[in-house]
Image (tube, rainbow, N blue to C red; front, top):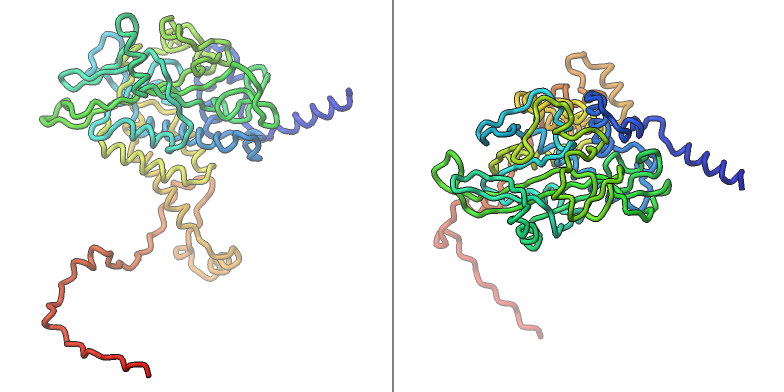
Length: 437
């Protein structure tokens, strides 16, 4: 029996890839130092999107496919934040006094409580949420949540705290399917949870070393979204009304009915207590008690406005980004998630350029055999050699010239060609078929 246990322990030890940068002690231990908590936030979210555990690297476990869908969901969410960062409205300030924050890394914005409110013009928020999930089945409808929103007569969308006399609205929104939830593998699929007591499953629930689900009431990492379209309403600063909608989004420690990794229960009473005293997603202090100098207000604290063109640009960037190799995606997120909102706004064009340049270089990689490349380069001057993209820094090199494809008329163009009058066509002679003898 002892030998079997030692053999089993050896197998478990061997299932830790040497290139896995995830440190469960840093991720989950209690933290009071701000910089240490920032490092933990960054590491945990990077591992959520790009897990390097044994199970992830070897595509093992019944939840592996679902983990990919949830990782892509988190990537789309953070691309939305990088390309359209929120303004911070501090307590007692007016909505129009919100400003871009310039000190805190953007990856931490959603990891310390509070919700990010995005108001849309020209598009229903339900369409945006469906794109966020990749139109997969990873989301579910929540029956209850203490958050909501309304639009005032001037066209400003306001986040609501649904307590007291407004409590009934929580159930109304639930019946109208406005409360959404997505469980994510916070910390990375297959990585260790607190005290290495279990591994993180595809939906944040515990699994064993083989990827099998462990029966438990623990779930860690839940994205809450409030989704509502108000119809044609006033648009601040514009004369004509348009379709207005809102997406209210935040990352919570646990899904309803579960306990977080830190034993904090999410139940019907959670919305009525002071949750700012609970630990954050990485066992740090939440916004109010963190010591961070510039903080968003408890409600209407992080604000973004997007029209339909901004939404379409984000969707296009997501499609390009998710088609890139994982190592290129990783380097992109590593480069930008440490920056605060003000720098993201100032460098917006460079962020977009990184994505689209990388996509062009990946799609235009040389397809000739390696030996033929070498012989071609040996007989060709340096300034005429074909460029082979570098894996280390794929997007900083100049893009190769695009091949001009011959323009072929489409069906609509063919239909628009001038028609020849019927009387100008040569008459066809009628032929009669000889009767069969």
